[in-house]
Amino acid sequence: MSLVEVRRLVKEFPARGGLFGGGRSVRAVDDVTFTIEPKETFGLVGESGSGKTTTGRCLLRLVEPTSGEVRIDGTDVLALSARELRRARRDFQIVFQDPYSSLNPRLRAGAIVEEPLAIHRIGDRGRRQARVRELFDLVGLDPSDVQKYPHEFSGGQRQRIGLARALALEPKLIVADEPVSALDVSIQAQVINLLLDLQARLGLTYLFIAHDLRLVRQICTRVAVMYRGRLVEVAPADRVFTNPVHAYTKALLSAMPRLEPGQKLDRIPFPAANFRPLPLREVETGHLAAV
Image (tube, rainbow, N blue to C red; front, top):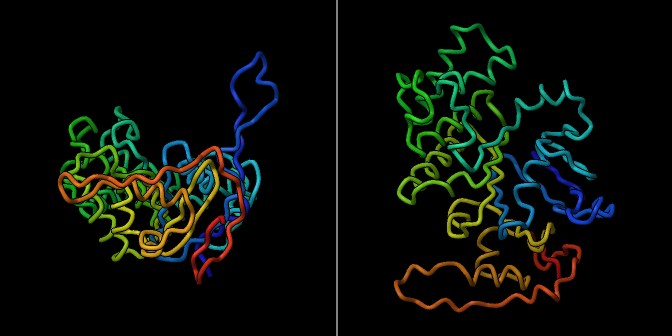
């Protein structure tokens, strides 16, 4: 059974403009359906504004969906009451994009990581603090640094603190929302290797939201391509990169930087004006495209 099942997910936001907004709305997520298997790294890619982050936040109900269905490990997430949702969130957590703004600057690092344990009333203070030291060690931080404040850490170390916080409750699913895009290139590989190592050791499942296609190709098992709130292609990672079907996917891949210095990009234009929202259909086994 799939760990995550998303069916016909929709999120609408009120449109800006006009005296009263005119009652119009914008669909940031439009009829999105996909599944994620246990211990899989499922990539969600697309340009800025395509709806990737909103989709990830709807899964966790950090943003309330307008309609649709989200099941995580068989639980209907959208049907949960506030109290039930708080308990269920032990099973799914998020690592945010910006390690600078996602940590409370007034709390020490140890308190930040301990916070979810305290909220869920897990263990007494001594046991929670011991767990925090274990988590620091798990993500490659010195346990003696628990008394430091976020500003005393580098960007990569702050992201490790965020990851330790996400792991505190031993979740089954982690939504990694652009987890390395705010970091220096030299640090990105360290954090990615840590994510892969933790997945192997703890059996984690990732929804990996990113715009860096080279990174997605390296670590994701399957990839979904998003455009204007809709999925236009879903396939195993190697098929997306070697045999793209949708015109938008082809245009997106053509913009990937080349490894060879000075090699000219052979950009493929995408006629956005001609975009038609079509349902996904299977073009080959396990390969869906909106064509």
